Image (tube, rainbow, N blue to C red; front, side, top):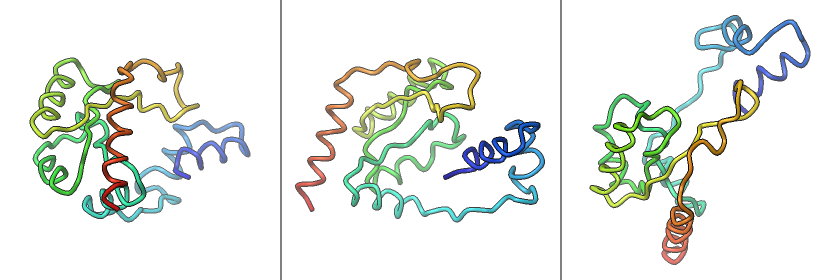
Length: 147
């Protein structure tokens, strides 16, 4: 459960409020009901993902603002990078596709749609070849065989 879920629950109880107001007045960064969350070290996060049978993929790197850590993430077990993202311009997608080639990462993509808070549906705006799903599945099998 995240802040968006909490905002929706608040709105359900108080129909006069909207998402923006709830964040601006109550649960946004530094607001009275904001609870700072503890961040995991990237090595711990990647290990948890891999140990649970998942594939560690760096989500929307074009919004991070800093690529200098990607090599460290790869050394820790990163296996994919979301080069294709709804907020990435073509040049940004090409840049992260090149980084994926450099480090032998699986190129993934997505809409970053968390549902319900968008004026229009974003799911399906980024289209990927089925081959990517197969590569991700192969990656889980490689990791399973090492356990």
